[in-house]
Image (cartoon, rainbow, N blue to C red):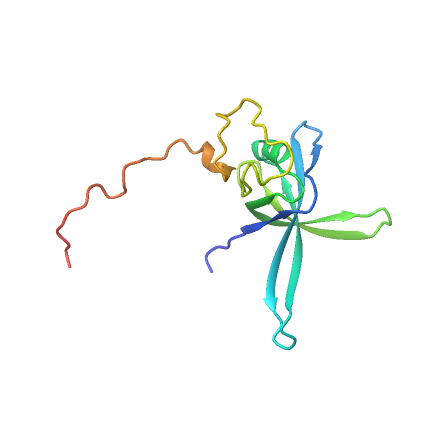
Length: 164
């Protein structure tokens, strides 16, 4: 295999309000706890079953951290893309422990709020930074930084002559 991919896509709900911390450099770091669930009907009993998985998410991207802090609250539905990373740390008892997290890096990652303004909890005031319009699903991520997008189609104009 020539290469590999480390990408995580999650759609879920926040289990608690975002936790905001600051690095020694002053950079904002936001921790999220995201719940994803799957539902199925048990073949033997016929009753509905549900399994919930919890995911630790850490945002190092300043803009995404600002959005998470300002707009996300417990119960908010989000879509996010990041990388999976495992880190080792030593607990208070001196035992080495491992934690696997979804990381939204400084120049990578994506966060999309899936709640509408009326459906979300908490204060969603845009702070005078936008038009005040809320279209239901707002996306904040690396696409905002890509300014070299071309509106012309790749390959130029299309001919009716097909060579096969």
